[in-house]
Every structure is written in C-alpha cells, then in structure tokens.
Length: 333
Length: 298
Image 1 (cartoon, each protein chain N blue to C red):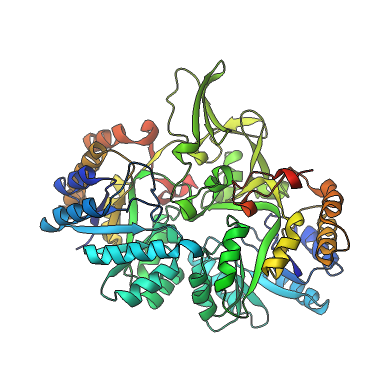
Image 2: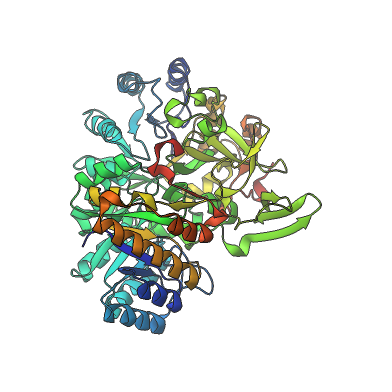
C-alpha cells in the first residue's frame, strides 16, 4: 500500500484517536529514555502497550515502536530488554537509530520488521543501503533537510521504503546530529531522549517582558502582544552582529499537505505526523485532515488541492500558528 | 599519546589554508585531517589542492587522513565522497554511514559525527574496517571509560580536546540567513568569518557560533587539564581543531602537557592567552557542555 499515514501516540487515548480517525500506523515509545520523546507523563507501560496494540491490530492497523535513542555501554541492556519486550508484545516494526540495536534485533528476531529512525541521520542512499545490507532495514525515515528532488534521488537508488515527515514540529537540524540541547542542559535526544527538556525551562515575568530560559540561558523575551511558544533552543531570538532575530528558525511547524500528489508520484511509502508529546485532540484533528487529503489525492491526484478548510484546521494546531514547507522547498535553506 | 589536527571547520581562502599547512609541517602534530566537512559550496580548495597539501605533509612525516562531509544531500556530494574514498593513497575519516558504506575494504577513521555511543556499535564499525574512532563530543569521561573496556583490540581512540565544538548540522545556511541571502547565492560570506559568527543571547552571553550550515559552541572546549586522565583511561590521540591564529601555540601547549614537562596548571596558564573565547569542559565531566569546571577555570 502506498503512502501510509503514520500517526503519533503519546498515550492510549491518542493511540485510539489516531486509529479511529484513519491512521494506517501508529507509533509509540516505552516509558523510559529508550525513545526520543522521553517526557514525564508520556508513553506506554507494558499494560497500556498491550491494550494499544490490540486496539490497533484488531482494526487492521499497524503499531510501530520507537527505540530511537543511543544506548551507552553501561545501560545497553535496558534497550535490549525493550527490543525483547516489543517482540513479545507483537509490534509490527521497530524504529531504531543505533546500529548495535539493529544487529541485536536482526539476529534475535529475524522476522521482525526494522525501520531506520530519523535519528539515524540517513540523508543519502549510500547510508540507507548500508543499513539495509547489514541489518535488513525495510524502511527509512528521512531527516527534514532534503529538497523534494533530493528525496526523489534517494527513492530511485534504494530498495528501502522511504517515509517522510509531513506535519508537526520542525527540526531545523539533521536529527541525530544535533547536540545543542545537551550543550545547554546536559541532555540531548541522542542520550536522554529529550530536546530542551521541560525540567530545565524557566519562565519569568520581568520589566523587559516575559522571559524564557533553558538552564539559565535566555532563549527569548516576549512583549505583552506576542505569543510565547515552548522554548525550544533553536527557535529562540538571539543577537548576531547586533541584530536580534530568530537566528536559526522561527517557531513554526512543518506542513506538506500540498505536496501529497508529488509524494505519491515519487513512490514515497509513508508520511509521518510528528507529535507524541501533543494531546489526543491534536492527534484526532491532524489524523482526520491527513486521512481525507491522502484519500482525495489517491482518488484524483490531478485535481487535488489542499483545501482552505484543511489548512485552517491544521493551522489551529500548528506551533506558533505558522507553517512552512521546510527544506522540501529550496529557498527555505 | 599523539596529537592530531582536526579538519579546518571554517571557510578560509586558499592562500590562508596553504600557509597554515606550511607551518603545520614543523609542528609537533602526528596526524593531520584535511578537507571540507561542513559545506559543499566551499571550493577555494579543490580535491587536487588538498592532495598536494596531503603529499607535502606526508613527506614531513605526518599521517594524513582525508575528512569527509558530515551532511551528504545530493548526488554531487556522493560523487565527491567516492573520489575521496577512492584516492588510493590516503585513508578517509567517515562522518556519515554513507562514507562507511563506500570505505568498504579500507582501513578508515570513524569521525565524531558518527554516533558511536557504545562498545557494540564500535565493534560493528571495526568489522567494517575502522582502525580508529573519534568519540562523539557530548560523551563524558565516565561513559568513555565504560566503553573502553569493550573496545575491539587494536582500535585507536581519539578525543576532540580543543576548539569550538561542532554541535549541529542543517541544510539551512545560518550565515547566509544572517545576511538575508539564499544559500544558493550566499556570496560566500563564511570567508569573512574565519572562526564563525558569535551568536549571543539577548543579555549578551556568548552562546553559539554560526559557521554556515554548522552550529558550534561559542565557548572553546579545552581539555588540556584532562590530558593525564585521558592517558590513564587509554585515549591514544587528542584532537585540536584549527583556529585562525595561534593554533601552533595551542599544539605546543598540548605537547608539553602530554610529555609532562609542565604541570596541568602551568600549561593552562600558557594556553590561556590563545583562547579567543571563554573555555568550557562540561561534556567531559558529564554535565552540560557549556559549563566550565571550577578547578580548571582560569
């Protein structure tokens, strides 16, 4: 089946919302630092994972487990245990970033499907084919840095299915190769499964405005008429040569709804919606719009348009209420 | 313990690069990494120019390694990579799994941008032909010690020990963005910033440095005070990242520290005037990278 819709599940209600609103696959993580959304109050324990997998598979949907952080030597067994647990639970595939986990999973559970996580930083077909040859990776999620022409070149030169990010928070850096968060806080997606962790965030009202700090470092300062977003490190306002601006990226979301026909034409296998940390309501709204859009494009790609109604619904749940095509659109770079 | 000179991470003119490596020939460095790791648009030095520098340094007794780009996006990036991997004389430093794939059958160096976070991963890379690995910057002395126990035999360990830390890569060029220029018509503004552009918070704290598509720390990672610890846990090589001025003095200070001809506090004093921004050493001590431990701050 081409162009599967892959939706985020930070908890059981979100998983059900994704399934009920037309997701082909849902992805989730365990309740520890084995995945890149290791936030408190989020994710699944053994019991909720079991319930979630049953709910989805009984309705003919797939369930993917994200195990996409990089285990360090002393804690490696925790990730191995997570692979064993996932195999026992009967997930449809594992989403992995670390090669040692790929080797363990491919040797121990040769029939278990493996996906290369975006945290694996594979932006070219030579890297993807390496993972395919050695560990039998069947799908790769591409970092949000390639233009559409570059994506198409990857698709043409690999037997591995390609999954693209379609909507949600926008990483401006190559995933898996960004340690800005640990530089500021000691914890990064690679090591701790978090970026700009909430425990390091402080909000303070001052005479100069509302300030957001990450481990004491001033990320932004808002006037009373400005919306303050979550203080992700790369989306703050900084000074470079005496100019103050969003030096790395604005607080904006990725939205590629208008590119669906192009993705179908190129042979993209799946579209991923970001946001395991978001609410079940977000998952419900975004899944419903993307389901309708993908179905419309599959039915009649030539006359497909991303309707103003869909765009408005997605706009309501976008970070900073703005969205961009990101790197898929060359001038963004 | 050996000293290596990392690849120049900035965009310097061809003359500056060649003058720099003319001096390197006389410095007490054992290994020199050459080439462009950050941006494919930087072409002051062509492959033949790099190979000429490489040959001269090899004649001067240096081990030369050709570093490869960390973010490979286009077919032309892969073409460059294939030429480097197939040069037939010098080994390569792989900074992407695509390079590991193409280095098949060769002895290569695992660069700092490949995520080697545990002993099993290092073992897999050794099976592919890796003879040396550079520890990812965010790992600590403690994590390294645990990994060293599982290190495959014969594998050399290198630690990035001096310079602004390369923290992130993007397909977006932040230097071009600063000047409201598109990346494809960037006017090569990086040439005007030989150690990157410092990014400050709105209360004037130096925080990051913009180096084209790469984001670095503004602070200079400096492990000169940790050389003895590194020797003890079996680190084979310390890497110094080139800066536009006084790199020779930095190398000399590390050389003294390694030979124990001066104490840790003496070499820190010697080195202090050549740091062009504040020092940091947090990562090594298992804390946030930006921190500087009290006992080694000057």
